[in-house]
Length: 577
Ligand code: ARE
Image (cartoon, protein in one colour):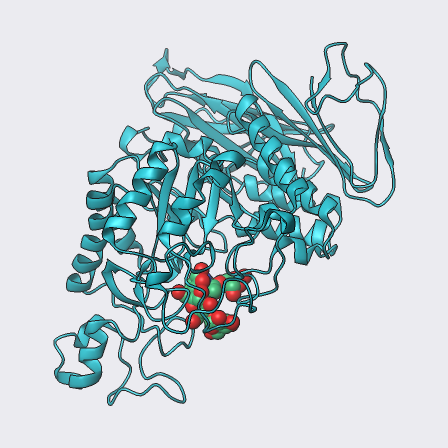
């Protein structure tokens, strides 16, 4: 056995409390190197006649990527504490792996083992239950619908008659969203994520002027209340965007700093590198990227922290919003986010906290900060295979397997799974206008652990390149909407809702990935679904399916028992086994 490849740490994705009773343990070994792994475990204080009373449980191979096998099991230790090690076997040898290294004989002293000291309920990662069953829809308010022309910003252009530019306006507003909620309900959406709505200068509103005011181009607090009410009446949750990493240039404290320099009472609200303050050639203060219009806030300053926590509270308390999406979440200190969580969850324990992080996010997902992050690593695995065609189906499955094993299951169940956003080119454009490939991506996105999000307009086949190209006005003329895509998504959403194994109750694992065909299974105690996706340009025959007489296609296709199955180019099938 290749010992160097064997890895476990009694923390994070390798050892965690799934709920208040259950521990999950994982082990990583070199791919195809180990035949069996058995967990040896027991209570550290359970001794009889000088012998530790341990138990054994076989671990399951829950996935493999190009380099590693991942083994998983769950245990409910009666006294919520555990010492444990791993017994590994291949054809020629067996080993015991513990915190002290490798042994040929099982160690007798519990101090040699890994330790999970105590499962304290308060430390269990717990996201709101409703999130698991949510299908999100992202709205960029300036571009969704303009229903009230009386509040259009100066120079607003006629709806959709010009391409989106960095600085143009079309006057999208809240009344527009209210008027089009039927569109979302028909699709089956039950959560909306709004990019920023607070007073700001730009069309995207990420340069906040006033965190406690609605931008007048969208409406006022009254219209916002009506919007929330209308959403809640339809069972739609509402999530807002919190831009706390930086303010806008016209935020009053920053204006005061510009005016009063070192004497400003807001001197320490920002990270000024040198006085006098300059914006060119580079800002003399820290910013988001190198954007002079976005000065970075000093969230370590207790005054700033208090101010932003009040903002976080205000919109929950007064407007009953259901979630906060946190902009540039990874550039703000962890301490701030811990206090943020405590503050907002005190008012509404069921509030969803979603961080915008594009990379490995384990440090934020341990139960004390975020409930989820935007799952861009999933996005890129799917896009790289289906759209960019830079990776094979095998590599895509490897990347997704390794992603799933890099977090705990309770984190995976609420991941925010997207295929595009206001920051990325639209998926149809990336897929070279190939609608069939878009459908395959949706299929995988909607059945992948987590909660899917649709970027406004993608459901009706809108196209667009990188920001600002992906922010065009929503097309409301039915004759210009792609109803085939809309109907396909509607069907996926309804299948997800009617089949428990489709959504987050079902476990997920790849069965195979080769020749452009990926097969994966989702299982609950009562239902097993087999998903088959052919992303190649030729028909593929899938053998050895051993389907029973009861096997049924979720799309109503005829399935013959015990035979192979042919998938058309870009074909797919979901079979209830
Ligand atoms: C504007 C222009 C762009 C131009 C940019 C240059 O529109 O065309 O490229 O300026 O600076 C907001 C607006 C943007 C605006 C930006 C600056 O929506 O239109 O861009 O402000 O004025 C990284 C960050 C991530 C961030 C993305 C954009 O980690 O937090 O970059 N996303 C959020 C929001 C944005 C928002 C801001 C932050 C600022 O969602 O909409 O921009 O408030 C990789 C990296 C990621 C990187 C990602 C995208 O994969 O790993 O770290 O994200 O690419 O670049």
